[in-house]
Length: 208
Ligand code: HEC
Image (cartoon, rainbow, N blue to C red; front, side, top):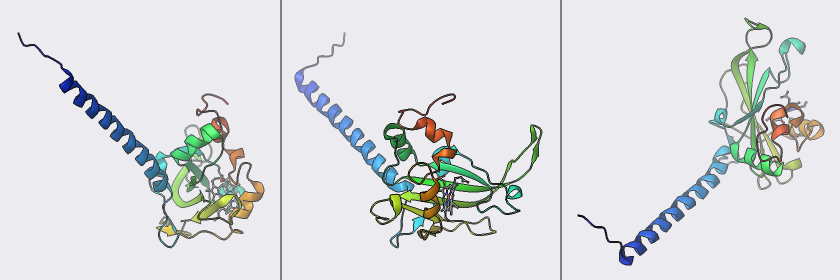
């Protein structure tokens, strides 16, 4: 019969190795989180925001709609606005109830396509036509209200987008958000997902 004999000379290195690998795994995880924060809002050396990628896998918070046919034929922001927040800032919003440094919120613009479906008359999403973003950064925008910078990747009348964008002048974007948005320059009044998740430690399920 084969007998395993565990003695301390085997056990001690084994435990040491296990502890070490747990340490390495934990460190790798922490590092990844820091990297992720950087990855969501990436700036080049000139301080231009790179067009956010992969945001459709962030947290989707809502779709305000300003259809052209309710705005004299051309709304200021056509038409569906699909809005996403980066996952790290969403986690912070759920626990602390505020938008942390490096928050990035993107607004993807989509045209109204069909106005009829088998479900009834309405507004149904058509084509992607633009992308805008706002980023909160004390280091990059020390003088801006709330430390928010606003960016526009949309190319007028084109399905293409700019690869990077410089920060917009305050009067183009920030001033309206500052004057009218309910929470720290973000229009939380139009996003039940944000209201339900605020400082609750969870997303809120069903109703409020
Ligand atoms: C006249 C006021 C006004 C101006 C100017 C304005 N916005 Fe907004 N923005 C809004 C409103 C209202 C919403 C939410 C409802 C909607 O999307 O229609 C919004 C939503 C957003 C959102 C989603 C987060 C949020 O707060 O709801 C982003 C990102 C955004 N705007 C970026 C921009 C950028 C970039 C510019 C400048 C190029 C800009 N906005 C100019 C009024 C404005």
